[in-house]
Image 1 (cartoon, helix red, strand yellow):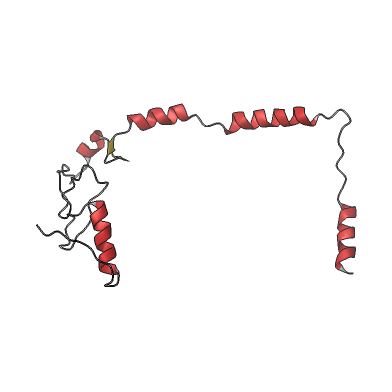
Image 2 (cartoon, helix red, strand yellow):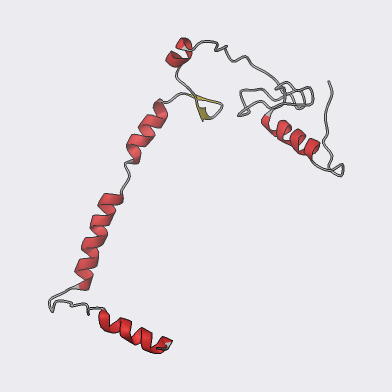
Length: 130
Protein backbone atom coordinates (compact mmCIF):
# COMPACT_ATOMS: atom_id res chain seq x y z
CA UNK A 1 0.00 0.00 0.00
CA UNK A 2 1.57 3.30 -1.02
CA UNK A 3 1.04 6.72 0.59
CA UNK A 4 -1.71 7.79 -1.81
CA UNK A 5 -3.85 4.72 -1.08
CA UNK A 6 -3.29 5.15 2.67
CA UNK A 7 -4.61 8.76 2.57
CA UNK A 8 -7.71 7.66 0.63
CA UNK A 9 -8.49 4.96 3.19
CA UNK A 10 -8.31 7.45 6.07
CA UNK A 11 -10.76 9.87 4.45
CA UNK A 12 -13.35 7.13 4.05
CA UNK A 13 -13.30 6.54 7.82
CA UNK A 14 -14.00 10.19 8.80
CA UNK A 15 -17.74 10.91 9.03
CA UNK A 16 -18.94 13.97 7.09
CA UNK A 17 -19.94 17.10 8.99
CA UNK A 18 -23.66 17.71 8.80
CA UNK A 19 -24.63 21.39 8.83
CA UNK A 20 -28.32 22.19 9.42
CA UNK A 21 -30.17 24.03 6.64
CA UNK A 22 -31.12 26.95 8.89
CA UNK A 23 -27.54 27.44 10.22
CA UNK A 24 -26.50 31.10 10.33
CA UNK A 25 -22.72 31.38 10.60
CA UNK A 26 -22.66 35.08 11.49
CA UNK A 27 -25.10 34.60 14.38
CA UNK A 28 -23.19 31.59 15.67
CA UNK A 29 -19.89 33.49 15.54
CA UNK A 30 -21.33 36.50 17.37
CA UNK A 31 -22.74 34.20 20.10
CA UNK A 32 -19.39 32.45 20.41
CA UNK A 33 -17.40 35.69 20.61
CA UNK A 34 -19.79 37.22 23.16
CA UNK A 35 -19.55 34.12 25.35
CA UNK A 36 -15.77 34.01 25.01
CA UNK A 37 -15.43 37.69 25.85
CA UNK A 38 -17.49 37.32 29.02
CA UNK A 39 -15.65 34.20 30.21
CA UNK A 40 -12.15 35.45 29.36
CA UNK A 41 -12.53 38.92 30.85
CA UNK A 42 -10.28 39.64 33.85
CA UNK A 43 -11.45 41.99 36.57
CA UNK A 44 -8.55 44.44 36.60
CA UNK A 45 -10.30 46.87 38.95
CA UNK A 46 -9.97 44.37 41.81
CA UNK A 47 -6.33 43.69 40.95
CA UNK A 48 -5.58 47.41 40.84
CA UNK A 49 -7.29 47.98 44.20
CA UNK A 50 -5.27 45.20 45.83
CA UNK A 51 -2.01 46.41 44.27
CA UNK A 52 -2.62 49.92 45.61
CA UNK A 53 -3.12 48.58 49.14
CA UNK A 54 0.12 46.56 49.17
CA UNK A 55 3.12 48.42 50.53
CA UNK A 56 6.08 48.97 48.24
CA UNK A 57 9.74 49.55 48.93
CA UNK A 58 12.05 50.57 46.10
CA UNK A 59 9.28 50.03 43.54
CA UNK A 60 8.74 46.39 44.54
CA UNK A 61 6.15 44.79 46.79
CA UNK A 62 7.37 44.64 50.38
CA UNK A 63 6.04 42.81 53.42
CA UNK A 64 3.62 44.81 55.51
CA UNK A 65 4.82 46.56 58.64
CA UNK A 66 2.74 44.21 60.83
CA UNK A 67 4.70 41.20 59.58
CA UNK A 68 8.02 43.00 59.94
CA UNK A 69 7.48 43.72 63.64
CA UNK A 70 6.71 40.09 64.41
CA UNK A 71 9.65 38.63 62.54
CA UNK A 72 12.82 37.90 64.48
CA UNK A 73 16.15 39.46 63.50
CA UNK A 74 14.83 42.13 61.14
CA UNK A 75 16.69 45.39 61.20
CA UNK A 76 15.40 48.78 60.15
CA UNK A 77 16.53 49.53 56.62
CA UNK A 78 19.08 52.31 56.89
CA UNK A 79 19.86 54.66 54.06
CA UNK A 80 23.01 53.62 52.19
CA UNK A 81 24.92 55.30 49.40
CA UNK A 82 26.73 53.65 46.51
CA UNK A 83 30.50 53.68 47.01
CA UNK A 84 30.97 54.38 43.30
CA UNK A 85 28.29 56.84 42.13
CA UNK A 86 26.86 57.97 45.53
CA UNK A 87 23.29 56.97 44.56
CA UNK A 88 21.02 56.38 47.58
CA UNK A 89 19.56 52.97 48.41
CA UNK A 90 16.03 54.42 48.16
CA UNK A 91 16.42 54.87 44.40
CA UNK A 92 18.01 51.56 43.48
CA UNK A 93 16.11 48.26 43.69
CA UNK A 94 18.92 46.56 45.63
CA UNK A 95 22.45 47.08 46.81
CA UNK A 96 25.08 44.77 45.30
CA UNK A 97 28.51 43.54 46.35
CA UNK A 98 31.51 45.57 45.26
CA UNK A 99 35.26 45.00 45.32
CA UNK A 100 35.35 45.00 49.15
CA UNK A 101 32.73 42.24 49.34
CA UNK A 102 30.22 44.39 51.23
CA UNK A 103 26.94 45.42 49.65
CA UNK A 104 28.02 48.99 49.01
CA UNK A 105 27.31 49.31 45.26
CA UNK A 106 23.99 50.31 43.72
CA UNK A 107 22.35 47.91 41.28
CA UNK A 108 23.91 49.46 38.14
CA UNK A 109 27.44 49.77 39.54
CA UNK A 110 27.26 46.28 41.07
CA UNK A 111 26.27 44.72 37.76
CA UNK A 112 28.98 46.66 35.93
CA UNK A 113 31.55 45.56 38.53
CA UNK A 114 30.47 41.92 38.26
CA UNK A 115 30.74 42.10 34.47
CA UNK A 116 34.16 43.72 34.75
CA UNK A 117 35.46 41.08 37.16
CA UNK A 118 34.20 38.14 35.09
CA UNK A 119 35.02 39.66 31.67
CA UNK A 120 38.34 39.65 29.81
CA UNK A 121 40.75 42.55 30.38
CA UNK A 122 39.52 44.39 27.26
CA UNK A 123 36.51 45.72 29.22
CA UNK A 124 37.02 48.67 31.50
CA UNK A 125 35.14 49.74 34.61
CA UNK A 126 35.64 53.18 36.10
CA UNK A 127 35.82 52.78 39.86
CA UNK A 128 35.87 56.05 41.77
CA UNK A 129 37.73 55.39 44.99
CA UNK A 130 36.73 57.99 47.54
